[in-house]
Image 1 (cartoon, helix red, strand yellow):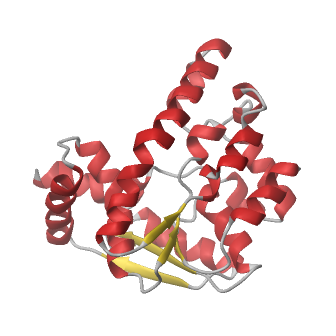
Image 2 (cartoon, rainbow, N blue to C red):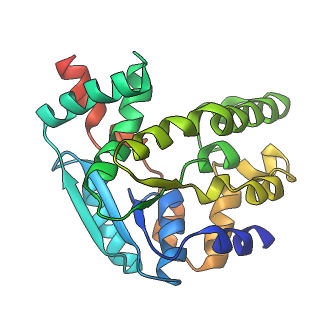
Length: 231
């Protein structure tokens, strides 16, 4: 597939990978470790799903992993800082950004690599499942445009707060242009992110990581649970 070959060229060989063990970050990490010496970083409560699964996934692909264990007080303090930094009261938006906040704060690397854009490009959101063909095409196109125009700037602000540079291979202009030549239905498939799973299979990513469904970052990390409890 031309898409996986282009993705391989856009993934840096070194840097801190925001790694939860899901398909998106696992494919990025799997490509990176074949080119250089990246390190994965996962943030969350000690007993959270993401911490546990990232350990398993990192071992499967041979990725060095650093765990960032946060407690409830740290999450609330970070929430308030991100709320001010992004100038928003949207709890969902802030909660989604908090794992990246902790990675950017703790990692030594200047470059942070994330899997942002895969859900929008390949139909990863659950809400896409009930849409007809026309609505799906419209919504996925709108979502990727909004992410590129506005959403990714929030991630950049978080990274820049700690003097880091954000790299988003899935949002590389040439990669996006190539992928969207195919219809939304082809990219999403009968399930979700079917095209990305085929790319991952061609790249050699272990089946367990290609097929596992994963919780959104704010839920898998345990962060949203804390926010609902404390705010």
